[in-house]
Picture 1 (tube, rainbow, N blue to C red):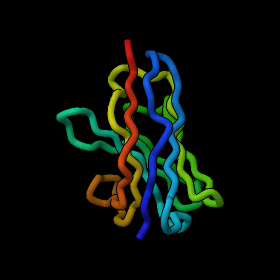
Picture 2: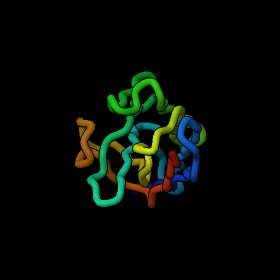
Picture 3: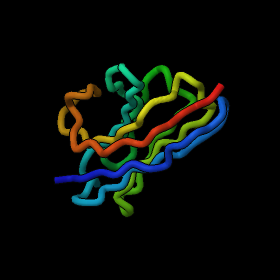
Length: 122
C-alpha cells in the first residue's frame, strides 16, 4: 500500500511561485500515473494535473495550463508540482494521489496524502 506525504505549501503573494512535492513514504510509485488535486473550503476536490508512470505524458486542468507544471523523479519516489503566476483563486489544500483507475476524476485516484495548504494573497 502506497502512503504519500505532500509538502511545500505556504503563503505567497499573487504572481508568486511555489513548488510542491509528494513523496511516497511507503511503497513505490514508479509504475503508477500520479495526480495533483486541490480542495478549497466548502468545495469539492478538483483535478489539477497528472503525469504518466515515466513522465512522458502530462495532463492539466484548463485553469492551470501555462502556469503549473507536473513532473516526477522515480528514483526519489517523488512527484512535483511547480506553480507559477499564482492567483488568489489557487488557494486550496493540495493533495497528491495514485491513479488506480483510467480517468482524471477523483474516483480514479487513491492513497491520498494529508495535503499541503497553499494560500495566495491578493
